[in-house]
Length: 77
Image (cartoon, rainbow, N blue to C red; front, side, top):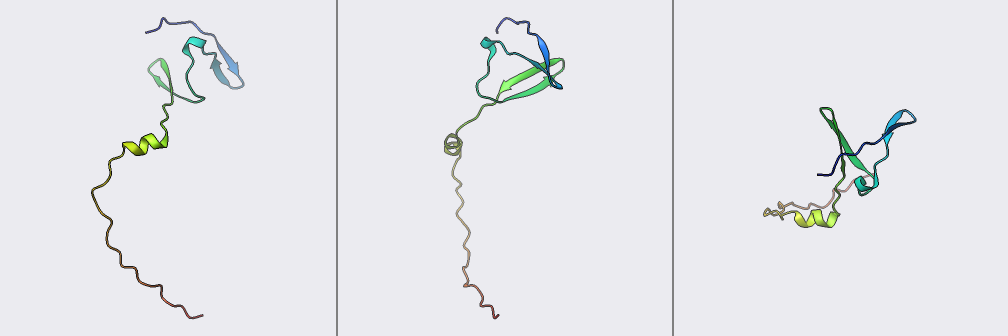
């Protein structure tokens, strides 16, 4: 675990903000933040390409149900 580092807090409009030191930078441009007790936890959002997600899915063993395809009813105008 890295050694803790003191950072300064400042105001950005109505929000409290801080600069993240270079050695603590997170990848991407979004993060998840939550509070656990007095701790504030900031985590990078782990995104996976859609291809990776789809390749992880297991195919279903079920077939499609039989559907009778009736012709459309004629309507009289």
